[in-house]
Length: 370
Length: 240
Image (cartoon, rainbow over all chains, first blue to last red):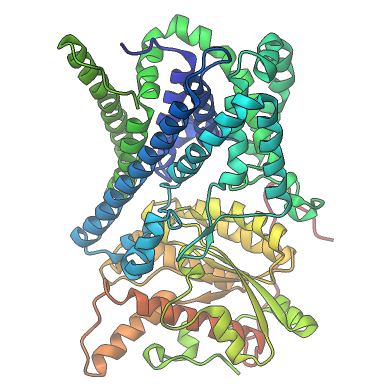
């Protein structure tokens, strides 16, 4: 029996569609995603809701599973994500290689950080397996793998010292930003685009705010005044995005990462804007549910099957890039890419639930949700 | 003296890069014998397995020089995203020189040329305002793309910005094309474009190092007219 449409699955679906569109650079429709007017984007939403979903998996206080079972389940989940990352990366490499050969255009081999795979295959394959080499736009899942590998420790800490989870997360975040600790990539030198040491804060915030008590309970009890505080922050962020105005980062006091806008380190201005954003935007859900129930049902299905949809979406984004390149990018082809892409994502989300339905009808055990 | 080329990468030095001074790198060199180079873009950030890397080549060419390479080779991003990251990385790492590989992703994504030009020009000027030199590394040379209007337009745009802003450009397409022709005229077969890229990266590191030494010891740098600083986004600052 699948879950009924709900707010978490709906927003997760929104994030997945946004990621699919925004991972096709230059596409016309990216201006209609919230990344166009918000400091934070769908990546923040995706990671936050992953933390929220972890809370649902770990269980609410008083309704928790056996710890050993939970730890095994979370490690298993991390392993599944890792396998998914390897699979979609290999598919992406094959897509780039075959396109380069078909079009007789080796420039495509340089696209999205793939060049090293073809020119230095020996170290780069080690890097691919070790997640130290990530293709462009295939870098969120490695973050998610690390976060889910940390999830058992978060769950254990939450079981025995729930009030320590957020302070420890904040401490790791502050140390990371203060000393600019990056996670190195190899063999192409650089840092992970999504620094897990910084992004774990957004994940833990999702996990903490999903609690019915503590900080989560406080937020729910005071959501109206919180939204009044959050609204000007969201408006200010939108003004900043449209005017491209932000204080010169070189004029910021040390440690500078606390004051500048940076996605890699998920810096405080971004985190604050994101929290304000979800506080404000979550107010719209009851109205969307009331007036557009079909949309809630449609996108909630994406959210319920998020891993499948994310993986297929990543491949479709790359396919969209290739198609745009072939047809020299225009609004008409962008429309075809988005419409076909969302339709395939909908099919991807529908298939596992249809399979479960069939199994239930035949009296067998339902498969695990993704 | 200019950094030398290995045998495989021998072409005329002037063909490799435009000559433009690197005053901030020169000042850093004079002050502390240490230069900090921020490399943005995957190819620029690569440490070649065969021919050494930019920092190592420079250290060999200039006695006593200490080069700190800060590689931030995130790829897949368009120039607009890289530009935002450059300002952050400059604030965090305070480099003397930014080595910016540019154009490939924008050409493939068909980013409007006007947008690309605005991004590059604004970023170059921002860097100059902050006493950071910049070297632009152009697109990879691809025979089959020579007839592609967008590819040629992006390549020409980068050249034009280099001239207009008095910024050094490593002419990657020209260098690669000359290497191909040299191989053919030397009795060899033209190397397969799909197979020669590793050698290309090795040569690229050498060309960049050569360009930097030419910029540093700028004898023969052609005199250029001083540029009128153009307004920066978002608020144009009046020049007194």
